[in-house]
Image (tube, rainbow, N blue to C red; front, top):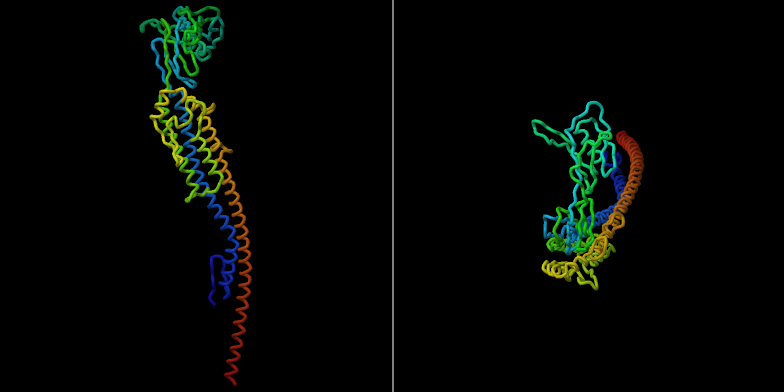
Length: 445
């Protein structure tokens, strides 16, 4: 009798193939729930892919909004100075267009001193050195008594108040090394170096605070620094005294804003197209979910933002036109006209991400999409990850049940097959005996 075999069951009886068919059918029926779970998992995988595509586009839009804010920030402003020899200007956050004037009464001076005589390093342990700044003495701990060690100790311990350098006031052939001190702030601070109670220095420059007058106020301002702030985001370096007011004009260029608005329109349209993939005749894996309409509403709020009562009422005034398909197109000439005639209005309409205006609305809306944990997309991805994890657990649990059932069936079918095989052997033996007896009876009849 030929034996039948399979990958999971081997039998010796003539019914072994039937036993195998029973095992296969039972396993297939038990596996139906796993097939359904795998289908659900495949659907979740498709949704994850769709969410990743949306996330990429909305992050790009978020970046475009950030750069739009930068385009009207300090980087977009420029300044002109009527007398660059007297002052220089640095613009920062908070700067606005305007005209400023500053009269430098006195650019101030840093107090300096120089060793009275050539520095001679005394032998033995370091002396008890002190520095005096504005009449206040501070201990200096030097490694030894050489000029370089004392100067290095002063810089490392009190470099925020005074700077020490070793200079050679002699020739190369006959050097004359001395320590020069300079206060780090303007004013009559009389920097001095003492060895015990004996001064080692001669005062060279008497320090003085800087003084200036802003926009003809008549009020003289004193400063211990030559770098002064005369308005939010407008920092002036005082270079020299001026005979009168120095005019400073701060303006904002249109080019940076134009580039940023063009990039914003491109990123916005890409986000709109990605959302549109999830609805309509060719709807994607997220079709029918409230997430799609929520994302559409965020985009709509950005594109239709308006500021009633202001001179710049909508983004259309900046050259951004919304068409019937929900896409934005940018006209740089419209922006140029608005910026030339009403630059302050453009700035006020855009506002800031943390303050008000278009940038605040766009930033808050996109944060609601991308914020970690609670954003629309981040929450949706987290939910799908959790569902996938639960499905994996269910699939593993179901598979374990099927594996146990299959093992039990194999054991039972093997036992039945072995019993049948034994009976078949007994049958064949008895059948053989009867056949032999019948043959003998015929032979001797």
